[in-house]
Image 1: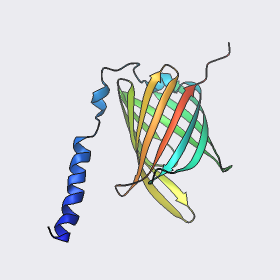
Image 2: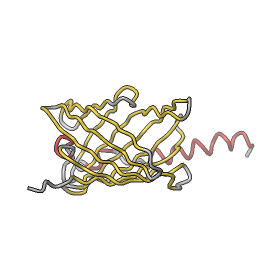
Image 3: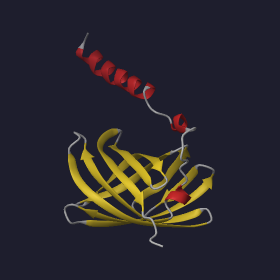
Image 4: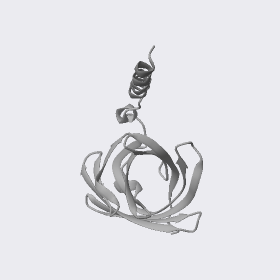
Length: 181
């Protein structure tokens, strides 16, 4: 087989395997507890997570303190990030429930809108984040999956890519903070 043919066929075969092996959100339709953002992201939460590079090496650890509030179908989620290197960051989301199981989110560093859909205990967010590094701003695509494990815990995994190539992964666990009443 010629080198050119090999260079063309191998990526196409890999793509075919990846596409046929992908989990679909509908696979979770009959799972519980149902993931409703307006319930889980209401009140104080905390999360702990890691960012791994494309090789799988952990390059950052972090904690996120969150507070969510909802008025009707519109929610606000304030996230304060604390990284292991001492840096901090804040993101404030405005999330709108457009209909049953469908959400649209915006934030200052999100290009356009984040589109989210729930099915059973799962949520899939798709969005592009603008990440400044020095004098350059990179547009990174996030394929963000959240799984509601119980009434107070969500596991979150996000694949981060640039021009279709995976550059990293984010993994975190979120916990609702129980009121001390």
